[in-house]
Length: 189
Image 1 (cartoon, rainbow, N blue to C red):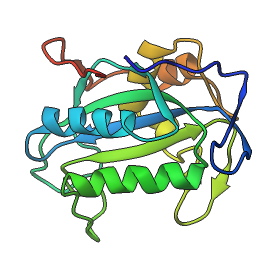
Image 2 (cartoon, rainbow, N blue to C red):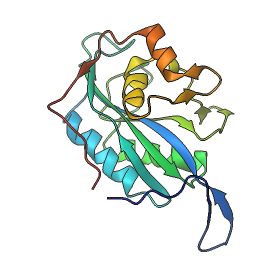
Image 3 (tube, helix red, strand yellow):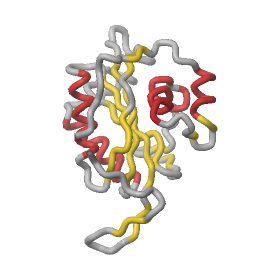
């Protein structure tokens, strides 16, 4: 099991001595192509193996209908990871994209096309970003039950930046279409 650092301390880079804060981050995982469970499990392991990242929580898995996807798209398996990290948000985003690529994620011009793996940064500490490469907090996560419900399962008192408690956001949008997959689970080695 990965040891969780104290979130109130600052970590020093062992090579440069640079002090970097430890931030809480929320990552959403999804897959609707291929061996969906294996892709999600692989993502958990790859994130856990990332230097300067400590996985502190893994949500239950939910099965959901695709949102605004092309006709005939299969259902998704979705989960949320809580991590503590000293990585800068842009480096964490680069890692998320590399993990997707490792699972043969194909990028297309078709919006919400099916994918072997999707790793989205939802929040990274109090970091705000609105550039093309990185948008934080995630611009649509507060309207997506497949993000909010697994996050709520891990952290019922969590607050979505600038929008309020995730419990309130979830109550507004509801959980229709979410199916808890009690027969499936993700492990952190």
